[in-house]
Amino acid sequence: MFGGFSNRAAAYAKVGVETGVNTADPHKLILMLFDGALLQVRTASIAIGNQDISAKGLAISKAIEIIINGLKVSLDLSAGGELAGRLAALYDYMSDRLLYANMHNSQPALDEVSGLLDTLREAWASIAGKAEAATA
Image (cartoon, rainbow, N blue to C red; front, side, top):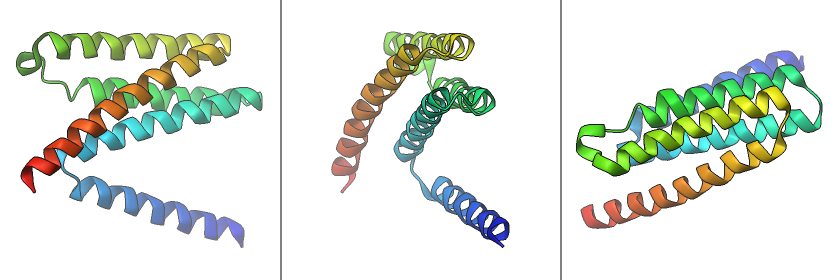
């Protein structure tokens, strides 16, 4: 009985995310990527605490996927200049730290990446808010 409910809830959540992606502006999409990466890092942290190796590995893999194939790929290196290059290097660094956290069950490495993502997300949210205010 609950398995069917769980499947329906997961399907509903997926539709909600897909709808959000389809209707979001570029600033909102980047915020969604930051939120997704942060969620996965926090999930990995909980999995380490629970000694759930497979959940930790899956969450870290998802976080790396979001950071490298979402956030990093979205950078426009030609238009973004030095800042975009530094962000690309920071995303690579975060990916390396996540790999380290996975191999060594390192909570400090997860905390470091979480802190970096939080800081970047806050900065991006501020930029997005200013862009919305300018178009309003």
